[in-house]
Length: 256
Image 1 (cartoon, rainbow, N blue to C red):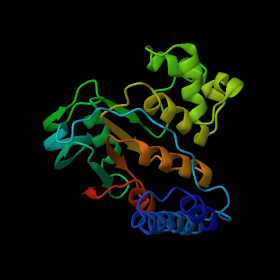
Image 2: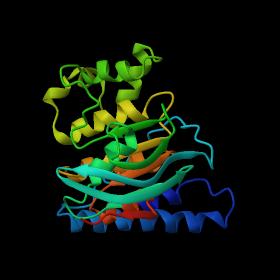
Image 3: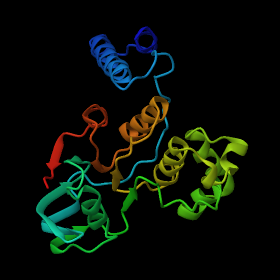
Image 4: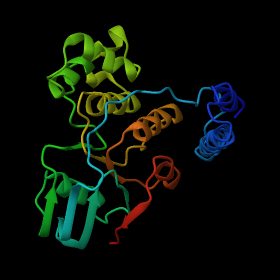
């Protein structure tokens, strides 16, 4: 808390009335992160204030429809789950919650276009969506982080690709590691770099239980990246503190 207060208090004031509000916002965010660290079993507060990533804007218009699901059902084994309806416009942020077996991951795959719905209709902003599942399977495990980044962001040269990876703490030779050798937290960080650090981040990012099996440092990297990302989010998660931290204000609750 002291570190965060100091960082804000030493910024140029500009307008005197703005400084107290800025300090209170910073202290509020810091205290939430500190308490969340304790609730998840983390130790101590040093180092939890994350760096600014300077992500490129997604270019998402404020009221543009990015996803619409009307009466969608999904097949999970012999069961048909749903129906569910959802409309997302602009930088909307929605959490998908519910017990195990309720069809959350299946619904995300249908939303992304990776699976067909059993019933209902789906509209999506084609070519403007990206998804990070629990295994970050958009990455080729046989390729390096850097090569994966360049495969997914072909418009950037080698220097720009290195710089983008470095913003997610894969500097120099670290960016040359094969994805297969990464820990769960490193793999997620590499996926975030490939999806968010390019010239044109997606309008809608879908995430399936992104905090599963992550240590506190990795969770904070994830939270920081998603707070800076200006696009829409559809997130499956059981972690209410995480959803609150990244600005999720709507919930699609699934039941079995």
